[in-house]
Image (cartoon, rainbow, N blue to C red; front, side, top):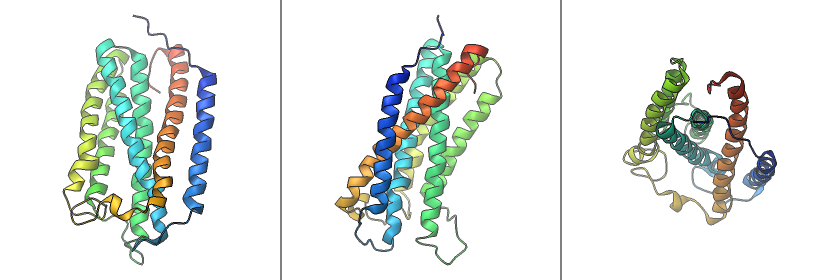
Length: 236
């Protein structure tokens, strides 16, 4: 089997990257400059909706990209697929951390102004932390194995397990518990508190941040492939 890394179409990557960066720039300007209606309690902190929620969509997209490549590793043993699985998981974890941090800051300056509370053990907050720990264990597991082929297969199995927990930890379980988040028990659904004008920015923000994931992921894969050519080890 030929594991030679494929040639990356740099021109296509550059064009798509530039489109995504322009898209994200427009979203950022709209997020801060577009007038929004006054929303009870949230006030102007509601603008964080354009950043906080898309981070979770982006993390979930990254998780399933990573899981797809892990599945392909088990099918073919291709170490290039292992590179892609690892880099998608790393970038996904990065967006997960950003989502957690923006949520902590949002709650602090909305519900806990004037207090020392930063962490309130909100169910979604706690489930996200658990999800990040699961992926932290994935990275530790990879670091504990030296043989590239063995590491790729064992890590792929674990990564598929981690991916199956994501919908439950980020969506299903928190919605069954009392929470500050929309849609949870005792709170109105997202659609009930989001003015249509905000959706003009919110949905493009999701597309933009997922596109930004693709840019970061592709760049990391390109770097890892260069190292792989030299060392024949997909770990980077």
